Length: 229
Image (cartoon, rainbow, N blue to C red):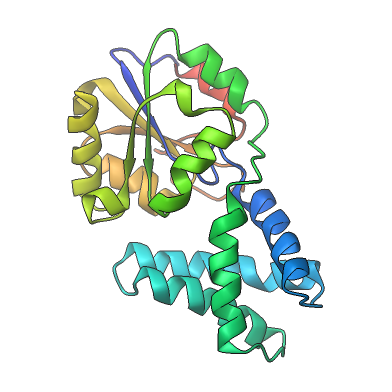
């Protein structure tokens, strides 16, 4: 069912348009080779991905800082694998990861097609919790920066999604209103509930096939956004 009155579409970036998991795995492959770390990549990724999600939840909830996230997720992953890696190497890997992450720029299937479809009729924006030093590079290097009128980053605002302040800051920056805007993202807590809590409409990009409450609007492929917009 088409939604009426929408003028502004706010997107999350990582895991919604930019294929974080694929790009992250390629980055680890590169930096492990650069640092001569002989750890099977597939084994590392299997333990790292859930650890990383856990650390990002702590970071969103202001329970840890950026430095703790960047170090802790690697330390815990290596520990889970039974690998002893020196702190100096972990810190070097953490820096190298940030340096090289935006050099890989795989997008989710149909990202460009849906952005081309939406751009003539809506003003498009980004709201992201990702680190400011890499998010703009991701947009630019992936070739999608020109689609977006504004980019709101959590480090600009001092709070992270789902905090209402970041959504209100993004609306103000875009000269948009709650009633004529919608949020699209992959995280139920940060993107969807965060938006709904200030009265924004929201659609979850549910590519992981999570079980969602019936009232949550969802798509499993980005092209399915045409059903609503």
